[in-house]
Image 1: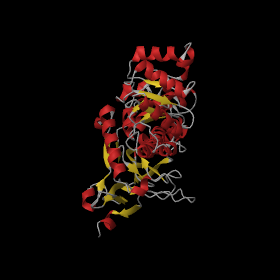
Image 2 (image 1 turned 30 degrees about the horizontal axis):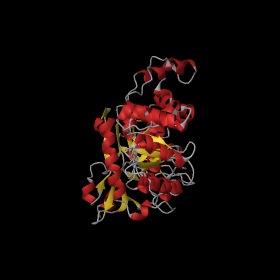
Image 3 (image 1 turned 90 degrees about the vertical axis):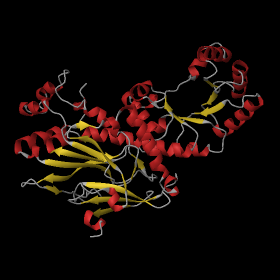
Image 4 (image 1 turned 45 degrees about the vertical axis):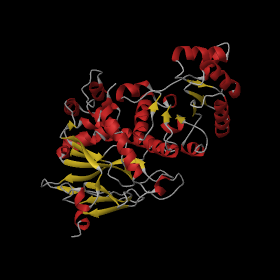
Length: 446
């Protein structure tokens, strides 16, 4: 399967017309941003940029699967356009918010700079990656914030598309999840993998005793036993009888979780298993996790609500042209002025966050203007937010792989920690900090 064909046809329609009229080689700047946060959200989380850089190397049309030939045979493009596509490689530059950073409405999450032809082809790939990964990471961040010091474990592979499962695990890890059940995410990015047993394992045995004994023989006392297939109280007694007080954990997957957790904790302590942990699953989201804050729960397993963005399955990001080269070769701002809240702000942008003396974020500042690129964020007393991911076709691999993911994870926790306390509330409200758009001269006080 060709990654290049996972795209909207209109990109190739625009490409073909621009190749004919000569605008294909005009330098163009596209920007990815979200006009609004999903309802109830006070911040978003940038995730997927490292994964996007990994994918860009595979974006080519001259694949052995016959993709390019099909484009011509189906009448999608003319042979002359296919000839151009045969040698396609993105040779421009991409910068954007560092992965793991919080973002807000209007934040220039990603900036793509190159010729019109090479940039326009990237729209669908960029938006599909960022809209999915940012949505999952934003939901995951709310969950890990609600969980505080208790680990959250990603278990959503059976609730989404097979490739989306690995991407969701990565996005959740950026936002603080401790591990994943999907093995491919462990292989690709070194994310810790977790997994125990389903109710089917208990049911396939003649008794719960046989099932527990088999799992303990295979996995040792470091495993987690699922104790709610039949009778929770009897299962907990049996688990400690067979494993002893050194059993690592028991899992609850149904029922009144706060009440059950308290009862099981009391039972485990009475049996001497004071170090045996309790992990809970069962369709959790950030609200359910917050409701369990006072319960004796040690970790949370989250599936469906996480991989579907907990009610916000897309980050609603768009990909818009904000500057293009004119007939004289000069880069000029362009903007969309349509009604209905879908207008844009022209010009390439640079962003920084104003942090007060106590280390709390106060304002998102977006600068635009002809001199925006050379301006250092420190000159305006702002913390820089953007990094260079790809420079004239060359990817900075410090943002990719397991090492790039680890840095994004650390960065997110720091970015979230600097938000004001109100920004972490689960109730509806305004974005955690306001966003100001300024011309470079205005920001400099000129």
